Image (cartoon, rainbow over all chains, first blue to last red; front, side):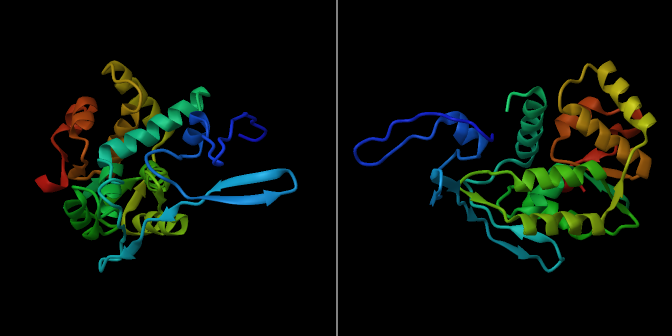
Length: 94
Length: 145
């Protein structure tokens, strides 16, 4: 969300916690993530820098992604999650 | 044999990590446009599901698009008329089905319009819940053939 502003506290070791609402909005849930730290005229910019799930072309021509067991959702659940996310966006909850 | 694959089958076929991957890939690999169909809406759902962020790693968007475009070439996408949409909405309301089940009903309507013999899905419970008599006995998982 452009213009969103939240204040967090940094501990003496330099650690900060990104608020849950922000983590949800940027899909930063379910594990550890890489974040790019960039300096800009306005200050420090954090940008999610996720690694990629490899993919290859099956002999039949289909693209097949190679996700890990932890990343694998039941296909029914995976589709339902996207539908529910869309409903939340339409309702203005997200 | 003519068939339509729903979004869950397309998605399971596209990722080797899924329990149902092998059976799904076998079905989609046999797809030919003259006898294989997909709801046009499923192409958008496939993009949405593959491009979603399941965890620390993501699928590259150019590869996601390639997967969806390949599906659009190997299957004949089916669209619905406004009358079809309204018929489905009245049907799901009459069946007291709520929320996202309407999308499965729209996919089933596409299957009816295409006149397929089989509708493949991993979501038998939802499809059987919203099926109407003309379509009820065509719904099966890829494993059921």
